[in-house]
Length: 463
Image (cartoon, rainbow, N blue to C red; front, side, top):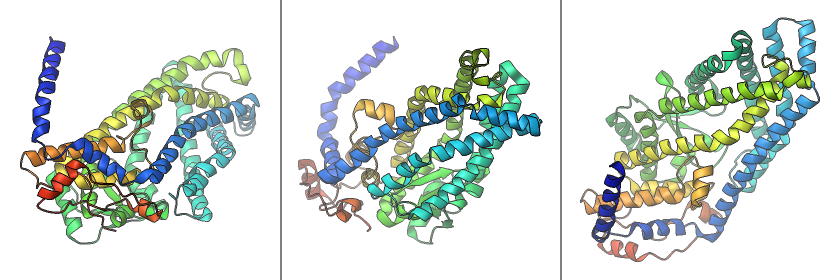
């Protein structure tokens, strides 16, 4: 019955479609292509190259982590460290801590060349980094120190649980891991983020007031807007919702203020406010909990087979010498769960996009920000690419959704009749800076809308 109802609805919608399209002030498809055309061929090729290279890097990173863990397992390094600590310190938590400390230290050192290429060389090659090597390396050391200490403590607690619970450790370990993630999320904006960036209250002004009004109108108990110095690391734009519970903070990057129009800032911040209002931190934690439970169950039920007859000198799953094997199994199961996790994040991002459009009512600003994000995100992926690799809607989807929303709001009389495409002559700043400014001709829909527009498009660049 439900299928028949859906089929009837689809048939009715398809029949009514031409009538709706005829009433729109511009063609959303043409308006979308006009926005995308502002990038030009060179910038589009550069963006595609960067993002598509990330596909290989994802798999290479997983393969490298398996290789390093496998090397430590076969050569018996973790077993040797465990045996030495057992003889000298004997207390199990210290054995687990020492073995975990050793594993994180050695694996980080062995994978550093890969991290250097991905995080420094490649970022400079695509003009996305603003850091010198000493600046980048200093931040890497801070992150490494945090991972070494916090990671070793967490793994120690996990091994104590494994030793105590045995056959049900994967359940109790999941509970503790979820709680640990929640605590870290709560502490991040207060104690960890300041180690890398400085967040300061946004300057008084009309834009700040409009963002606060937007937040408060949607039930966000915000009394300030924070700006963090993302330009210390990169020139790309961004904003985020960080923290959990009382430490939740909505922040925007200084690069977003410097590179985009006020309309784009409001559109992006409305998207971030949407994450808070729609409780995506809670749903994200629930989704993560399911994946953690599944991953730990996979490790539990495959470890015994993989380490059968004390292979590699591993006694059982509670033996810290088996940590490299645990990491191999987690990497393998990650190949299965990663695209599913990305799709769940994608769903939340799409929800926040629609919330942001309805809350800020800045479709041109949202389209502008989406094009600027294409500096490092491929705008028009294939359907499979977007499903498998994307954790945010593609640039094409975001611009198209904004243009569809705008066309229908104008048709309903809730928005002024402004052009469907970008303002005449508008190009992304990263295109101008590369000296490859595109010169797109206006689409028929955009030209027609320009003739009847009552005010200029709010997407006019602010820089």
